[in-house]
Image 1 (cartoon, rainbow, N blue to C red):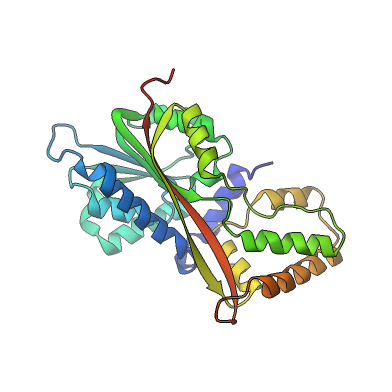
Image 2 (cartoon, rainbow, N blue to C red; image 1 turned 90 degrees about the vertical axis):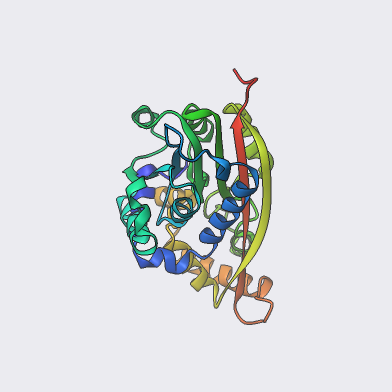
Length: 299
């Protein structure tokens, strides 16, 4: 069972204060990488000064890491609609723009909405030159249906561009949990989201009527003083609500077993995934970047 929209909204509302930006180190760099590919491929050639200003839609704006860059780097004629399901995140994003580039606020509209609720989509502008998203698509419960709805909002030459996490993200944590479950002779439960690969996303996009014109991946490693500190940082950016959490809520393990599980997981993590310096532990993030356009041959 995937995480419910209500859970995600509550989790991100709780994380929308300074805790998110203080702990979300990877997400701003993902936005940088996405904008770099957009500059290389398409978006910054959008016409400036046309009769109809280019319309941009951002899905899952969060605290505004990508919103800020879109507002600063796209032509001034562009109009941006930044969408998030958590009002706390929208408030944080608006505050970030007000602090960093207040002159752009008159062309950025913040909307509380859920991209997966297709009944909201017709209310939005229906001819976007760009639909962009950073660190959001991994939360979709129905990726094909949602992306198909977004595809219908693109202009004929419009582009969908997004950055998301790949399957090697937090592989150290998952391996450590597997070792802990095995040590305690307990059935394994996956902790956290399950991330799609480049090949899986390419197939999902094709099913939704989009042709991939760019796909790339890279990895970066964060260092944390302890596994517990790493889990605290993950929770602080809203990733505490997950499939494993729902499964455990339905049939939670005994408190003693859970304490032993985490104790064994911490031991395995520290033993097998130390930081290169020998102090602390490492955590890998695999980032996938996609740029896609409507497939002319799709039905």
